[in-house]
Amino acid sequence: MSEVDKERRKAVKALAALGGFFLAGLGAFSPLMHAEEVPSLEELFQRHYKQLSEKEKRRIFRYLEKRIKEEYQVKPHIIDPQPLKGVRYAMVINIARCVGCRRCVYACMKENNLSRSPQIQYIKVLEMSKGSINLLTSKHYYPENEIASKDFFYMPVQCHQCENPPCVKVCPVKATWKEPDGIVVVDYNWCIGCRYCEAACPYFARRFNWTKPYIPKEEINLEMGYLSNRIRYMGVMEKCTFCLHRSRKGRYTACVEACPTGARKFGNLNDPNSEVRKIIEKERVYVLKEELNTVPRLFYSMQK
Image (cartoon, rainbow, N blue to C red):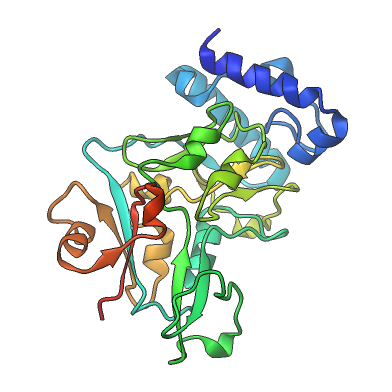
């Protein structure tokens, strides 16, 4: 048995000792478990994503497609695009161009199969009065008639895809990790729902599924990445993955495509000709909470 397996099983046993009430809050041991079902031993102890062979992955993908089809009456296609060699993704958000319309928020929800009830959003757009950059007093919710007002500016916040992600360090079962292209991912089938990663994230970018996610059948995105936008389970963590099921195939993230003002730029930091690389080299950019040494790959600029 590998060290990863041993750590997860120790964590599962520790959680089991706390009793059934606590387990109900976590969504139980395995994310393969639906509220009305009990997982088999094979499902409960499915190996970590990194330990799966290609044959095992295909079997699991087909199994998940079948489960989703039975539950939602749709025909999904689960893919597993791998990191591209020599690529490090980054995003730059120009606050001077952001008008607070939240189109990025809703495009992200649609693309990534986020729960509509209770509603989960990966992106929070903060409204701040001009002349006062204060995250603590910013508004997460503001009326539509304030959008594009001359009295405010807007700062979208989401997962910063850190080079030194604190969320990864605290996971007791190694259910989350940083990929070679810089994207931090979660193995939903390995997550035990302890929420340590949520507490460790300084950008409030992690989301926990307190209940079974609800998505109307007609709004489900059928193209699903195993480590990104496949439908999640009650009791597991999730987060932005820079739409890896799109970006690893050469496409922009959904939030970048949806932005009407071009405030968002996305690309490969390793490519000297990429737009994000040129912005970072030539414009004045900054990152949130630089003093924490998380080394984010989400940058902000105010270039008009």
